[in-house]
Image 1: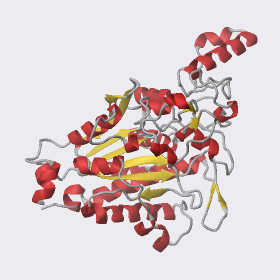
Image 2 (image 1 turned 180 degrees about the vertical axis):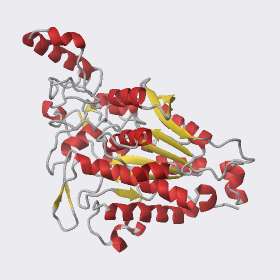
Image 3 (image 1 turned 90 degrees about the vertical axis):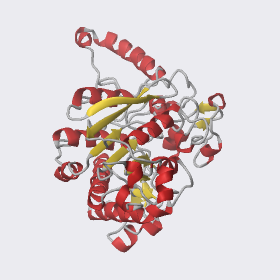
Image 4 (image 1 turned 90 degrees about the horizontal axis):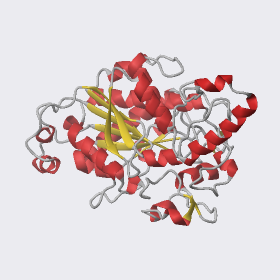
Length: 425
């Protein structure tokens, strides 16, 4: 295997074949024991589960055969990409995870200059949102973030490829996205956070999961975790265990950080986790209009990319409805929804809310319209509403990710952002 995630030390070229096999085996064990998800060149699947969770069934840690080079998803792979491939944007550490890992973001364009004369709450009370955003209320600020749940890879891959487009005009397949470039140019400030939950992502030692057919249990195990007897913790049951006691698990999954907290349901008004605090601090500085929170969890019986309505200010409902229609119309035209009927597929009334969560907290913290976009998984297939099997290829999943970003940026640029969506006087 070659590409952004390959690893081949120079001195290995002169070693004997038997020596290489031994070295490869021991390096694989060491890397997995540290929670690193990269694969050694030519090595295939790992030889053992992570040392800290030795009872994970071996088959659960099987890599996909021949992952495409554009599938950059691990902590090390993303870090390498940011260090070597980002030149137009500015890479910065915005915080440190509960496990001591840096959380990196990439910044493009101009931040808002100057402060307003009141708090966000005060602006709502006064009906004057511009008083919160300040003199640069007209600047449009867009945030895209992925891997709040560390076992969900599609958003990471999408954002790394978005960065490639912003840097070069092409994704990592070499495919041009001129409309992404054009819409990004209309945004004053663009912030991309490829991995929010660095702890959770580092814990899942895979770059790309093996495809499991219509069986989603193993991908769910890797994400939500398994109890000591191997039983699935599962969704939404995992939300009843925050913080999760790792000693009760065979594997805690990628959902929680190293403190056992699912960041989507942090103690937002109490003792926040460092990852959540980093997002809150970023939001306070940047005052974004729109935040896209990318997840993997499309409905098994309607297995297509779907945006979910957050619990939010009622004043933002029209903006959400417009965003939903814009994004889902583009997905229909791209062939990425269950039918070509826009009256059904682009109807915001068909989406669901999962209650108060991180997106709600971000809205009430800084006024942003923050929404979850759930992607299908590369690891298993689902069904459409007619009962037919639906599988999304890696290329299709990337196309959907970039299309969502393109149309969300277009919507923000066309409609002017929060100060115009609500309280704009």
